[in-house]
Image 1 (cartoon, rainbow, N blue to C red):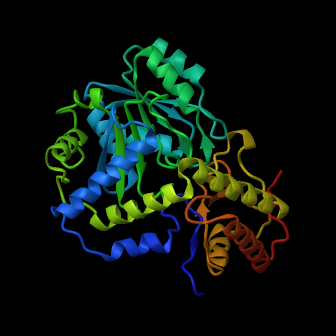
Image 2 (cartoon, rainbow, N blue to C red):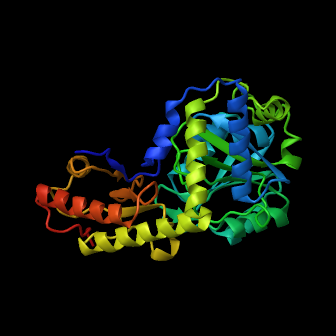
Image 3 (cartoon, rainbow, N blue to C red):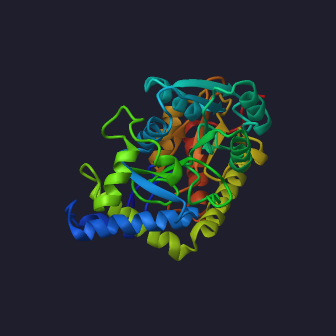
Amino acid sequence: MDRDPILLTPGPLTTTLRTKLAMLRDWGSWDTGFIELTARVRERLLAIVGAPDTHTVVPLQGSGTFSVEAAVATLVPRTGHVLVLDNGAYCKRAARLATLMGRRATLLPFPEDQPVSPVALDAALSADPGITHVMLIHCETGTGVLNPLAEVARVCERQGRGLIVDAMSSFAALPIDAREIRFDALIAASGKCLEGVPGMGFVFLRKAVLAQCAGHSQSLAMDLHDQWQYLEKTGQWRFTPPTHVVAALAEAIAQFDEEGGQPARLARYDDNCRTLIAGMRALGFQPFLDARWQAPVIVTFHAPAHPVYDFRRFYEAARAQGFILYPGKLTEVETFRVGCIGAIGANEMRQAVAAVARALDVMGIDSGAPAR
């Protein structure tokens, strides 16, 4: 094979050659060039979310989950109470990390194949005035369901509660404008819809809220208030930054702008998603979600009902043809997932469907149809 495998996952993603080449230079973390690079990346990120004046963006080393943990630890006081809207695996992870940090966390459960309900949230907040913050996963990539961010934000604003949004798999693809949607924190990462490489998260925070968060975090490395103060004062990261990741992200943002920004990125991902679902349906596969709730990020498919189907063999057969699939996250139903994001287009999605067809043929499976 004369190319790297295409990553049909929710991150890491397939990246362009330009993004890869941006990592060939070494940077000094205190060098003025790198300080300027960090400032430029932060400025562009704030422009994408539409919040250069009211918000700041604080980068953090590590995966996106590091930044979710940092946001909860920094914003939620140790006596706070987080209500997590739960319709999937990443919602449950958010509740677990809040609990591990000593914050009280309560799950408000919803079916995994449906979005969360702002009406149910409103009732829960009215019933418990002790809830200080709400946690929403914008796109729950356990299934690919899109949750109603704007409606949830309106409920939180009306009820006077803080809102922390995990926008890991939606930021830069789905429209999010901080001038229209009120949140205390919105979290994303380098290796998602901006199509950079993994290794850096970033958190958009309302300045008025962040200014009151000194001393909340029990972590030295994950204190976003301290990271913000140090960045504002010196332009530098407090601890060794992921220099090559930042450089790759700067190059990825340049390509994002050249493509046409968020609307163009969403259009490409929408096209990828439609192409994938149509091709997979032709092979008999059935998406897990109703089309109304499907985000163009990752699609969960029911596993074939054929008795010889085994995900590991299916995965290896597709991988041998240059496509990396993703296992399912559901416990009650056997599924697998196929991502629609990254530096790929409809041609790669058609090739992926052809690879799936060949994988079924190798396994002796005549149809991807699930059990009734």
